[in-house]
Length: 105
Image (cartoon, rainbow, N blue to C red):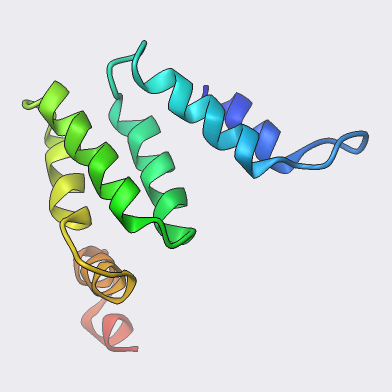
């Protein structure tokens, strides 16, 4: 699913990339695969990067409801439990493996 979505996003020499088709591939896989963390994470990141943070947060919360024991999804929910893009960026930097000096940049 992830490979197919990435291929749709990038396109081919004969066919231009289509981010909308890529998103649709990911969305259509959520229900049948029971909201797996990898797909949820990729789609949530794309939505957030497109300034659709409420949609990303809603999808992550649905994934947690369906998979309450999945630690990756629980962690993702805490990251996406923010109000805007700036706060999301700050949370991601704080949780990164970067050194304190790199985080300060």
